[in-house]
Length: 72
Image (cartoon, rainbow, N blue to C red; front, side):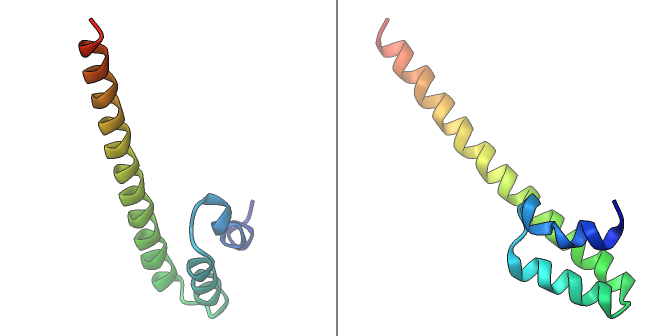
């Protein structure tokens, strides 16, 4: 898959429509260094979302363990 096709599918991997549009604009205007920097920023946002989801899972796991202890 070429770079343009991958940028066209950023929303499929969790980026917002606005992020996809900005990445397309940077790519189409030939601003490769800025595109790379922007994609790294998008990646950081996705990692932050992943960590927040993991914290939620950890809280649910804690509640499950707590509930299991109370049923014994």
